[in-house]
Amino acid sequence: MIKIDYRFSTKEMIGKNGVERKELDSVLKKARAILKKLREEKRMGKLGVANILDEPELVQKSLELASHYQGKIENVVVLGIGGSALGARTIAQALSPEPFAQISDKKPKLWVCDNIDPDWLNDIFKISFSSSSLFLVISKSGATAETASQLLYLIKRLKEKYGESWKEYLVVITDPEKGLLRNFARVHNLKSLPVPEKVGGRYSVLSPVGLFPSALIGVEVQELIRGAKDMDKLIFDSGRKTNPAELLAGIYYRFAQRGKKILVMMPYSSRLNNFSEWFAQLWAESLGKKFSLSNKLIRAGSTPVRALGATDQHSQLQLYLEGPEDKLITFLKLEKFSEALLIPEPEPGLEELSWLSGHTIAELFNTELFATSASLAQEGKPSITITIPELSGYYLGMLFYLFELSTVICAGLWDVNPFDQPGVELGKQYTYGLMKKPGYEKKVKELEKFRKKGRGYIL
Image 1: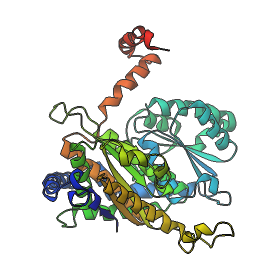
Image 2: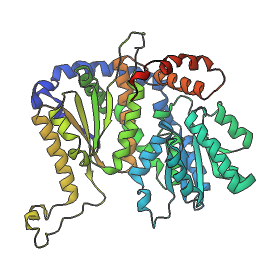
Image 3: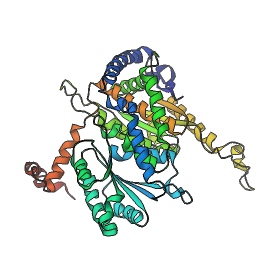
Image 4: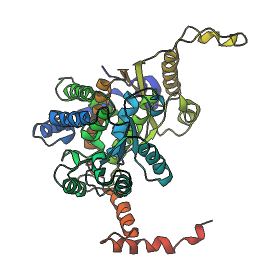
């Protein structure tokens, strides 16, 4: 079972920068009230992030379509950005060997085109067009400029190589009924899968958005769902006074209220490095809101920062220890690694390293995690440690769902909508105007003040 150790966030352990029991209990009481409302929304089918776990056809459709391509492809190439890309990339890194390690592995490699840097994109296309590849375009609306531009370029390349059979190499994952991509799939009779109507991109990892590309590369996606369902029971049906999602939300919220506005996610597992990126989008877009649900100006949220143990002990830790007191750190720990790697006796000339002999690299890794958290505690810097028994589909599914529900509960504590992202729309509209999309001419005029003023500040 996943464990949350929050000792080093308490006043008893780290002094004045820690929370007191009564202080945390007060927040957890509010979190329980929010969960009660969420339980009712789930019962009524209005909580998409939870209700998708009760739609086995989403898993079945993903598996059936994936089986159609079994043994036929060497690469799976995802065109998508944000939530359309981060989930699959996180699953692949955690549960499938890195592409560079798949020299003798017959399973397809996953490539995720989640940016529009033309040089980088061209490199991925060179790789994917040099061998058999299946391309997945993932976007709920289909109007996302980055993914749309990639798709238009891809179709051109596919037609150049395959002619009229180009459609066989493209799968669409989008809204089940409406939108540009759904229409495109209908017009060309393309294979497609749905993004559930009530599930936004950053909450879609346990839908076909994350499941289909993962199934294509050999991940047992049923285990992801099984883990998520067990975490769902723990959160909604366990009868515990405090469950993991409430606790996590309460701690994160309370420390943000205390001025710890930077939330560091630091896994001690390179295979969970992308999990930090997935979490960063989930947390930032869900909670970073200017206004509350009652339209009160609040500037909600805290800033997610990604770090990796033990690598960033040697880059960021100095700042965390002796810099501003504005951070709460979450460590992710694996109890068991697939390989522990015993450290042998040293060769002549390296006798001073004999203290390492007989230990394993896995033991050293987790010892450094505890030593880092203890050194932070010594400085009065708060942290929590989330321990996962092993890195498997089951526990990764649990972890995804835990953080999704913790984020939704935290949104309730801040009184914001966790399922919208109004702030990013203006930047999109300015882009549309500058790229001459019809209907956005007024936005270009708004930009004139930025073009004309301040030239003296450009060196």
